[in-house]
Structure formats: C-alpha cells, structure tokens
Image (cartoon, rainbow, N blue to C red; front, side, top):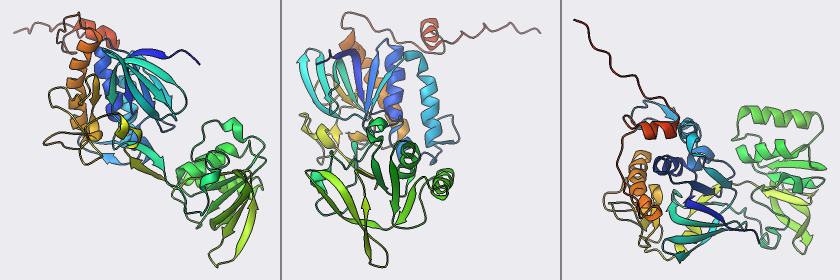
Length: 353
C-alpha cells in the first residue's frame, strides 16, 4: 500500500467555492489537495451548466459558469494545488489533534491537519437506467464513468445517451474500441453541435453505428454482458452484441458518504456550521458553500466566498498553532503580492500645481 499523501488541507469538492478556498488558504501558506468525484474541475458549474450566465459576482457584471471556473483557476495558479478527479471520499477519520486520515474509493489516502467540505449539494451520483437486472453487471461490464480509456481498447462498446458525456466519450473511445455503437432514444441530442457533427461524420464513414431505441434488457453471465436487447419506438426489439455498456443518463446529487462521518445534520442533507468560522460539530472539519447550513444561509456563490475567507483564518490556527496570525491586505502587503507573483504598484506621484 502506498504511503499517504501528507498535506495541510484536503478540500472535498473542486467547484468554485473549493477553488477559492485554495486562494484564501494559500495566502496563509497552507497547501491543499482537492478531491472531486467528477472527471473535471469546476463542480456543478462545469458539469451541469457551463454556459449558464452569472450576474452577481462582485465587480464582474457578467460571466458564464465555466468562465468563472477558468478565472478562479487562473487566480489560484501561484499556490500549486493538486487535484484528484474521478475519486469519491469514502471515509474521514481523526488520527491526531489536529490530524485526519482521508480515504477515497480509488484507494488514495491522505493525512491532513484540516478537512474542508465544499461539495455543493453533495456528491454527484450517476442515474441508473431503468433496465431490469442491471445490478450484477455494474462495475464489471456496465460503467457510469470512464476512469481509464485504455481498459476499453479492443472491446465492443455500447454507449447509451444523448448528452455531452455520451457524445464526448463516443468520440474519444471510437479509435480504441473494436466496434462502437451509440444508442439514443431519439435523433435529437442535448450535446454541443460540433460533437454531434463529428459523431455523424464517424457514422457516415462507417467507423461507428448510431441506433435509435432504448435498452430493455441485458444478456450475459457472471456480470459480463454479451448482448443488449434494444426496444425501438415502434415496439420491435433487436440485439446489439457488446462487451461493455456505458449509460450516460445524467447525474443526481446525494449527500453520499458524508452523512456517515459523524456530523450533526440538518434535514439529513445539510451540515450545520457556526458563523464565526464555518466549522462543523467536528473540530478541524469545515463546511463551506451549498452543503452547509446556518440561520439566514443563502445558497449563493458569493456567500461561499465569504465563508471561505473566515474559514481560512481558523484553519491557520490549526496548521500553525505556535504562530501569530497577522491580518494583511493583498493591496498593500508586499509579502502577499510576492506569493501571488504580482509587482507592487508604484508609489503615488506628487501632483504638480
């Protein structure tokens, strides 16, 4: 078993609030690792509505959700945060004071002084398609995410869905699969037009198949698919031979394993925190953004930014208990400007009269 990754802070969630936490913690010399169940940075903003307009970020009259993520990534570059994507935190265990052991479903282990939960509404869980008897195949020949593309090389792949994920993986896996079929219940897609055009070009060249219909049942033994029975819109059925099926039916939000980490919960879905530093009922573990609750809570990105700033002040005291915390402004502190890699502004020039 590999050695645990040692860091000051583990941030669970790589959405806008988790990203800004890197900034505020970095200003105070705390290094962070971020863990997210998605395969990309940006949380809900990147996965669910990248083009959604946002108008209430102070000083930014308009940006898109993806634009905000891109700006935050640029802002936190100086702090060298490390990302662990396609991983879900399964357990958080206190092993010191302060020290936590954090484990993911991929076997990655961390030791950190602080844990910050910035998981939005919880973890993204794939929606299971309504196919009778699908459970024995899950994790063996039915997969809801692509963790290693190479594992699909030379296989007969059936991708089901009509959104961006289905189209993106159709394009990415087509060169690896021995045969690839895209199945969707209608000819209209919810994906980027460019992806749809590229997919249809592959169909036109005979490199992949596109089929209309829905999977009604699966055939196979010991969790290994051999065929998917497809029902068409006119009620007829036919079989598609396949080794692997990738259903992309969207994502749903669930609190997930967080609910088992010993927190007091509000309505079984939110983590209560205090409003002084947004610490949970477990000392050293903080919750910021949409996943927390306190009287007067507003589920706004700008509220999460405020919570992160106060959280970092308390986190510093856990990480550096023997150091005095001196509050500084980025506009006037040369040490903070050095961390950010920016030059201090020139001194004001005297006004000639």
